[in-house]
Length: 625
Image (tube, rainbow, N blue to C red; front, side, top):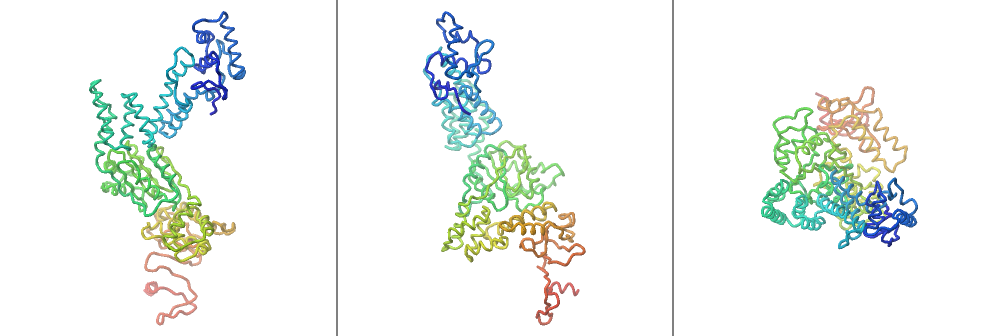
């Protein structure tokens, strides 16, 4: 937006000041009617209020001609009754102010409080010091500025309210205090001021503000504060109870490179009912959500991990159990979402608010989480939900924050920090570390697992063996979740037992992409063909038929150049399709593997001999039986 004609604090066109009084008055009168313009009679009366010239129409034409010589021939257009300014609304500051006020009000109604603040500040900046004061009435320019003083007040009010609603309470407290002092009966301003003082000075300061206002109303008007103020007063009285932080862990080490993301998500949980942090596994979504939950201004915060939940129908019961409600005795009705008594228990445990519910690792039960969150949002007003997942929930109340990878500098810093923790005397070469970190794709988990290898390997050796990254990046700390102890577990999550054939195929293909980065195009095509080709295994386990309804598992279970391809997708007993050669088998029983060997083992001496298959003892016992 480029302002060509300014009238609010000075009169100028494209930076060139206009000093002639009647020219300034002419422009002010025309700016007061942006669409229809002014008639000749109105212009004459406004420009010569005391004594008109002998030929007013001719004098007005001469004045308009002078204005066109300064502004351009097309700047002032003729109308059937007079003249009008022929510039766009965003080229005249007196008109642009109203554009900003209207846009800011629309964004505030839509819940975009940060956008409303930006619009209000852009509109206020056009005044360059505020509206004029102590001026003489009767001047068209003065009258225009006084008329636009209402727009200045509206923008000031909009900015203060939007700052408070966006969570920027320290910035909002001062402007709100000034506005309340000037407009003591504006309860909307007072309501946000009390909330700001609660967050900055404490609940006692907000309660004192309310008590002062209540006494003033009774003394002057004989009435009580409105329902919204009374509700906030009761909420503050209840809020004297200790702050609740349940399930929110403290971080074992600093969270690097996520300051901007923490600030962005913190803003979102204030402006949106549902916020989802979305990104691939190992990117640090859980740690980010924990950091946001730990510093949240909500009185009640609960963090519920859902990594162990495998069925959508179990989500509500898991959340209720984590909140201390217990699971409902009634099973959920098909197609009707969570049971009503479970929902009522969750809402009761969260309290009247403001409360924040954090649901972590939702990707394998997205549908169940979406049903629960939709119900909570419709039942409550002061409960916000923050989720972490590999896919958004798909709700209209949801705002998505895609979590980016770490930048190269932060990846290097994280690697060096974790390498020193694993081996305090390690001094890895900076060039080698930078080259290795570039190949870790900005994934914090991959970086930490690689840094842990510094205890037994050099950086150069880690880089060489990174071609087989799923075999290399394993052995995470014991206090980490099982899904974060190896890169393979991260890529293989969510639970394979709950995935359809198409989902498993897609995930296998994505792992092939991930594990062949840096390899030739031929190698990548070969690995993808190995994953998605016809060599598939048949699920022979009856208990697995529900999980693999088509009878085939999309993961190849035979020997492959990629280490992860040799693992079973379902973890159940499987047999090969008819007509295929026997391949290696992995089960969860006493037989860990049955491998074809060129040697045989003597049952008496235990000496391997060529020509037969070496079977484990438990297998031989079953075969002999």
